[in-house]
Image (cartoon, rainbow, N blue to C red):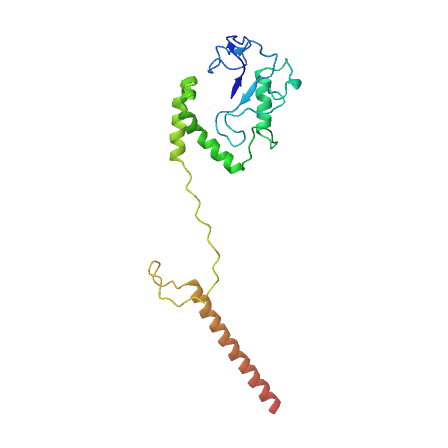
Length: 205
């Protein structure tokens, strides 16, 4: 993120709102009229929520100077940006994308920052860590899902020989099912014939 304004002069922020181990622990540089007018806010990394390198229309940006409050600082500006980024509201500079596309942008942001010379110059201590993450992401890349198979209508199974890859005696499941169905059908017909014969004999006697 860039807080862009007119010509800047070095005014280190005495109030430390970040840890001493961060890149900004020694201070920040702001424009001379900061915070008496709203800043221009833009995002550089492709993210699926905001268009890169385009000014954002927010209530605390230079699109709405009438709503600017001089009591706001970097922390409140960032909180407002994060709150808007996690929502679905539309504004100038915002884009629409699916949750899956946002995840793809998030994974690709590591490589994008590594390929960005400005990022490597401003955050040199982050480069080795990001390179490790990028290598781990490549190693753990999830394979593409198989193509969706169309449903095929069931056909009458063909009779096959023993399963060579199995135990040698295993028959196809469809074949066994058909075989037992035929046996039960024959047995049922035989039982019905016997019952009819017994009934006719009893009637004749």
